[in-house]
Length: 123
Image (cartoon, rainbow, N blue to C red; front, side, top):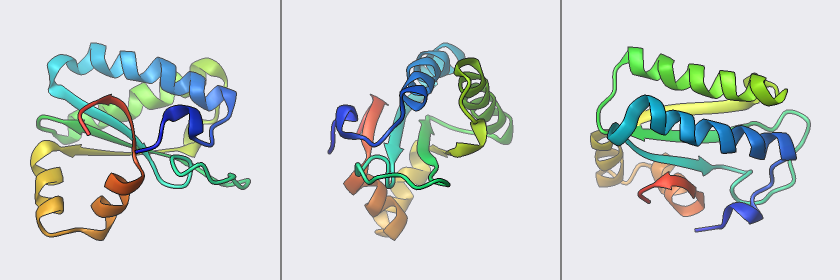
């Protein structure tokens, strides 16, 4: 697992992450299990003009309503620091889905597990 210092992020993107993690904790409390940065930015690859910041938020359980709450927190955090919210690609999973994806050896989850940087919570 890579450290956040090694991630390929701009100052504004780091500021967004600094804002959104505490806000997600505030909104979801103990139901928030993890926030992970994954993908090319977590691997430290040099971003190109259309590179996004991939985030995976893990809740103990989820619903469409909660998905929207997560997206709102990400959007508002980006806007607050003047970053473009559209460059934050966020997925919301619950712990059961993560376990199921790992059990079937999902290529996507294997990639996430290999590259992720834990911003909050469990690996």
